[in-house]
Image (cartoon, rainbow, N blue to C red; front, side, top):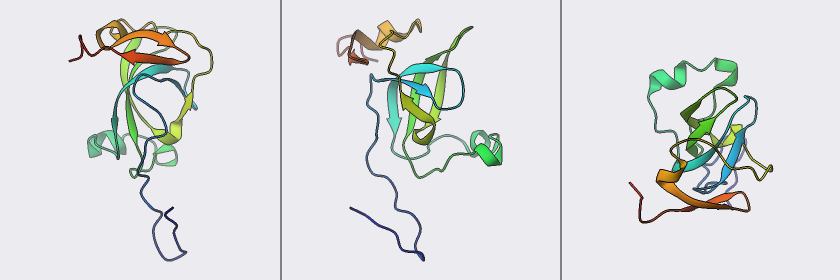
Length: 119
């Protein structure tokens, strides 16, 4: 296990906490979604990152997840840091219209990857 000393930066996290197909929710904002891709560290634009208020800006040295996301009014794609996600414990499916393009059935909070229809 990696450790840091007071004079060294925190170690980069090497493994994602959440899995492709897993249903998650945002820690602070009212949306949930299913993970369809994972970046081991931040891989979006600097402009995107700087647009986040500094006091809420996530660290770049952690996994970032691509979600088929939904809230009460719309469906969209979201890019969310691991620190801002929680496992969704509702057991409810994600109604995003693209879910069927990526996944098969929902089982125990996780969708099975659809290898035949995979992009």
